[in-house]
Image 1 (cartoon, helix red, strand yellow):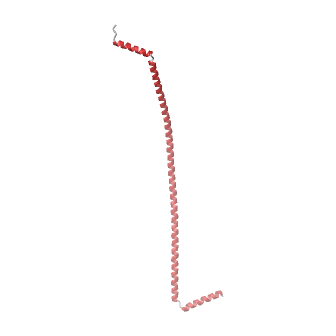
Image 2 (cartoon, helix red, strand yellow):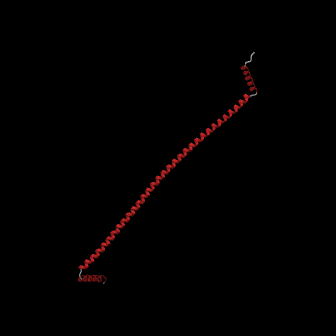
Image 3 (cartoon, one colour):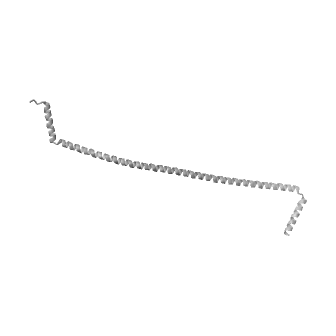
Length: 161
């Protein structure tokens, strides 16, 4: 019988496989692969847990962000309302101050007008008196002057006496 090279290679392969089985290489290999698969499973489980924790944290942060955003909007709205109120109050105060100043100025103007009228009438009276005195002095004679003086004295005597 002629032994062919392929036959020898085949026999060598079978011997090699039997040797591997006897030395428990497939068991060691499978146990190594099982350990590796368990490690990968654990890593996947940890990754899933981390993903769920990240989702929960993201949801919490989104809720907190929306709460903060709502608070910011409320603060802005409150500030705008306060600005409107302060603006209205300042407009009212400015109007009141303006009205008070206007009333004070009107009173001063009225008082100055009255003072001007009084001084005008006082000057007019003084001028009229001076003019009247001059006219009376020019028209009165000494005899008329003495008669008026005598009549005044007699009136005083009759009054007191």
